[in-house]
Length: 66
Image (tube, rainbow, N blue to C red; front, top):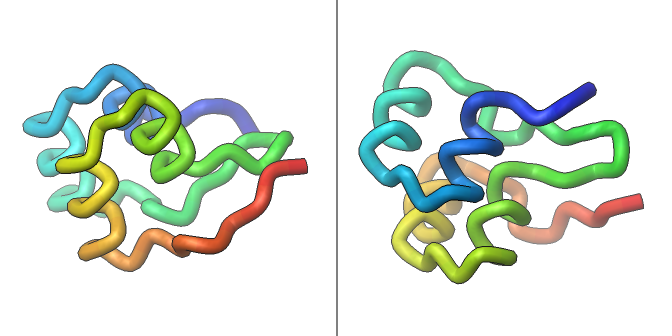
């Protein structure tokens, strides 16, 4: 699997888009073929507000990459 819109919005710190996607059923647990989740993307870029939002929406905090 590739990057989803939620991955991209999380990576670029687009909090309003992240909220929109989550409200419309985006899969917070989606992972790429190498295991990156939207939470990884937000954390790598230092977007703590998005990290918290993803965690509040059941993002798995212990997901590992390949």
